[in-house]
Amino acid sequence: MLIAVIADIHGNAVALERVLADLEREEPDQLVCLGDVAATGPQPREAIVLLRATGCPVVMGNADEWLLAPRFSASPDESTARIEEIDTWCREQLGPADLAYLRGFRPPIEIALDERTTLLCCHGSPRSNTEAIRATTPDTELDAMLDGVQATIVACGHTHEQMLRCFGELILFNPGSVGLPFQVDRRTGTVRNPAWAEYALVRWQSGALGVELRRVPFDARAVVEAASASGMPHAEWWTADWAIL
Image (cartoon, rainbow, N blue to C red; front, side, top):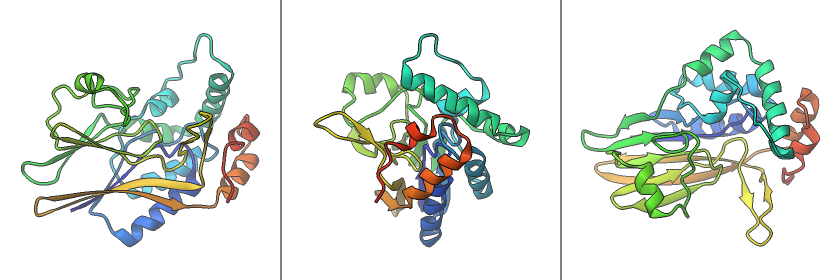
C-alpha cells in the first residue's frame, strides 16, 4: 500500500499543482491532506478547487477553522496583524460552496494499513490542531500529546518543517508544507520560503514500512506573480521571503 500525505497548502495553487503532477507518476493508493488549505496565500479558491478534485479526505487545520470562524488577536504584533488581514481577504474570496467544503474537513483520520497497523493523520497533534510536534519536542510533552494513541505511525503537519522521529514504538513524521515551507537559518534564526513543495509517501508492504520525505521544485516566480496580481493585502511583504531560483 502506498499513501501520499500532504499538508499546509496555504493558498498556493502553483505548488499544489506541482505536487499533484509528481503524484501522478507515483500512483498512490490513497492521498490524505493534513489541513490548512486556503489561508495565508494568494490563491485560496484555486487551491480548494484543485484539492477538492482529488476527492481526498482532509483533516481540519487551525487555519481552516479560522476561515470558518475568524478570531482576531486582542493585541497582535505587526506580523500577526498582517497575517490576519491576509486571512480575512482569503475568506472574502471564498463562496458558499468553498466554505461548505471547509466545514467538511475532519478530526484526526485513521487509515488501516493492515489489521494491526494504523496510520493516524492529524494537523498539529492528535489532541489539538494548534500543538506543534517537532524533532526537538521534549519527551514529557510528547507523552501528553500522544496519550492514548494506539496507532503505529502518526502523521502531523502545522510546523511547515519536515520531520521523522521515533518515540517509543511510535513513528512520527511531518510531510512538511506544500505551499509555505519554512527554512530556518540556524545562525540568525531568520526564516525564508524555499522554492520547493514538500510531501511524504508512506509505503507498507508485507510488514515492511517506509516513510519517504519529498521535495519537488516549483517556479517561485509564478507564486510571487500570483500574489502581486491577486489583490491580496501585504503581498510585497508576503513575497519578500521567497527564494527565487
